[in-house]
Length: 362
Image 1: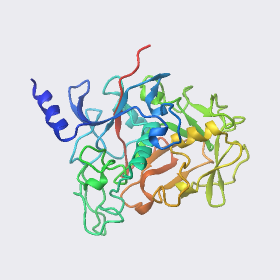
Image 2: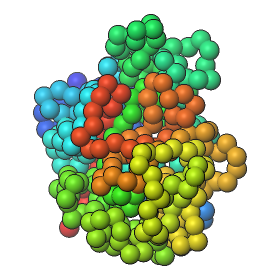
Image 3: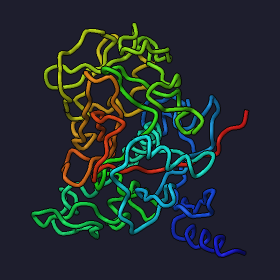
């Protein structure tokens, strides 16, 4: 038995759903395996259909491996390792490249995958805490994780080392979980963008296949037909007839098929649970939007822990970040989503996380 086999055996003894995966350079990443789930298993009604995170190139996959930790980069490749300062100051395209460089099946964590994990946390009652208040969670008064960068000019902790928080910072509240989904650094996700507020995605979880381009001009981007949730070719101007759009309505975001501009000239934000869908959004489109974490399913007040949602309906393209970072406070969390960034944006609060799946064969 090799040392790598022994390492995996030791890991699984403590964390049964964790596995050490190796890339094209033979370097390890610690990953958390999540087997395929139905809508019903994720708290979205009674449908036994498989959540889109587990459908790649039109075929179901048995499961998805998610990086246990926010990633670092070595030799142009992304790695999930504990106790590290997560890589930041990275653009969306650079994050995609660092993941896909690892080999077939490796990819930037997609929005479909992130939403699936968030829904799973909600079903389990384990929506995680994290570094959203300068080294600690807003609900915690004494615990602080290990700093991984210099403190700010007021002596406050900013980024913390991956996985050094308490069990409450794990997605399932156990050592086996995915760490730091709430705060620390914002995380780029693939497979979702807006164009002048029009919601565009890659079909199902096709963003998990590195051969499917997520470039700004890629033909893989599809709009969502509001009436029935089918995917339609966008017109390139964010005004596709009948597609789902985000429109700002005084103090909340509304999902609608309207091509009428909302008149905003800056990004806007509201609580995730305040997002509404108007009557133009049909049942199937509603369920898809809920599966992607763009619309609530649970109407109980506080069901989403006050997590916030930002979007931009006046720019030609905006990409998405998840989780929040070290000073977002109670608005950070697994349902936090920020769609106000250009793909070229980077900074000390922007990071990412890789994922892996076995790509289906034709």
